[in-house]
Image (tube, rainbow, N blue to C red; front, top):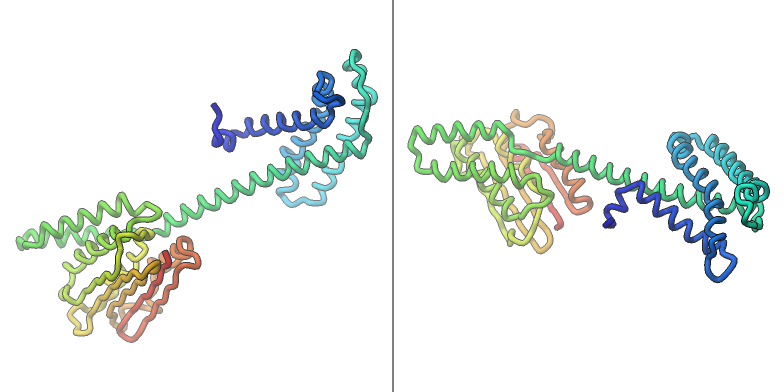
Length: 336
């Protein structure tokens, strides 16, 4: 049993259904009595032969090889020739040939050359519209697929060096028999699980994303001399909302990468995530040294995140990045 999906995807079935529908419509146009008779079906069959030829010459040859290459003048020329040949075939078929092909039936030529051209034009227009519409939908699907691949490429992932550094940290903690080692191992395990199994989804729970960021920052704190200067505040209800995974990660990665000297009195990393009704406000600030960040401090990770935001939240986000003397700040507002 054919489903709607089968019809949409099966080209042969589409063509069969199109011509069956056309045949039925033409039978009821050509019938001479209340109900279609045998001669009406025969007449319609022969009437459709040039229609089928003209439609497929146009769709298989002219559209892909001439029109799609923007040879408009050549396309008009070949289309005019196709109309002429189709109309000529009709006149010859129903005036001269039909009595030879079917001598037992008497056919009356109801239509003149203009009428044949009208039928040809209608079928060419409808079939061309269907083909161009199908090509357009294919192009839209291809564009969406390309966007999905582009987003995959742009999607922030945890830097592999971070995992190696974390393992080194765990090794150092094990040598010191640090009491926080089990909790740190669990944080790394949860972070890896999230990156492997959740980060490829289109949207994730904001609560899960926050838990991921907490684990990430917990592991990063182990590598700096003033972990108490790292703050992560979450304000509002994060359990009911969904966001794109890792959408905040590059900002926090950037903060830990360019935080300057953690022994400096001005050292700070401050992250705040605030949920207000249908709006999310994210703020990330980190201290920097004059020679730590070159230019405006926006590396490839931040640029990729900006592109992701344009794809995922078009017209629903606002981002502001400010580089001051010793402070780098990112402000991001998202509308759910």
